[in-house]
Image (tube, rainbow, N blue to C red; front, side, top):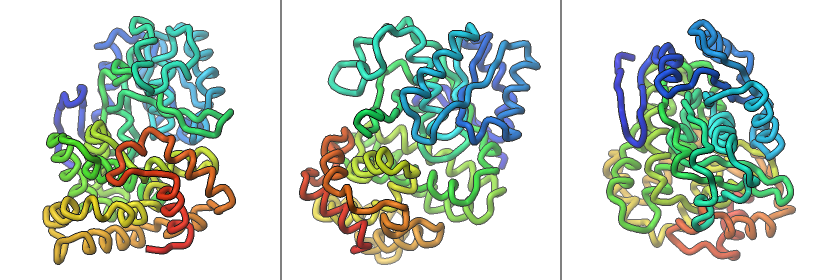
Length: 386
């Protein structure tokens, strides 16, 4: 992979194979001399993480590692991270890994100087103004998956165990100062994780594109992001060391997260509560719901999807050809066709529907998502009824 670039949209991005070597320099440029590298427990001892910590120490930085995270992080993980941050007298965070490591790294940095509980900064109205902006530590983000796009996001997702809901904590200054996107870091991802995270990138682009409202910049980014997924996801799953495919999927992840400032929709509104209640993989849950949400929204998005299908050069471009493409892609990379295959039963269908319509993502669905509609989508996904 020969592509090397420096981007500043929506933040400074160092993109290309081998750019992880610039991690210590990136920290120093932001005044971080004692970084806490935050990642999940599954990545704590793998070679890419060990090498990253070693590179910081070799550069004379007072680095330490925190990895006490669940796949869907909870408040206890955040409190433990804050304790580690303060005990080590750290002055910044390297958020490292997939969505959980990136989100928790940003949340530790955000909360390091706050006095109110994290729930006071949920993405509701102007709650973010409650935060002390001077109490936020700088963040360098290093994604090791290609899906969530959290490395270019201004929010972090955390599960509230009291209510079994995923809550979005937002502040405009939560955006990482510098992002290092090194496609080589994603080569070790298992095919299942490559598939799930890649479908997360697709769902971000697709829901942003379909969300109502006028935002042609987001639409353009989303459409090109989907083209990269069409071109590269299957290759990345089947040929893990294909750095061109890995790079294009990493770019698609960045693009999806940039585009979804326009909005998300029913896929995320349903996958958030399912993930919170059943602890499923977020991207794979979005992928499972994808065709059922598309069909539910058909009347509102058919013209838009027809234009998308033409851009993607699908045969006989139209809604049906795009839906057929989604179904084939899911099958080709091992996405479950039903919620049951994902380990989700229908005993709490009513609760999931109630939680879905209360989720902030529901507001961006092209067809207004009410209790009946959320229930219909959940039922269809449970039965595999397209």
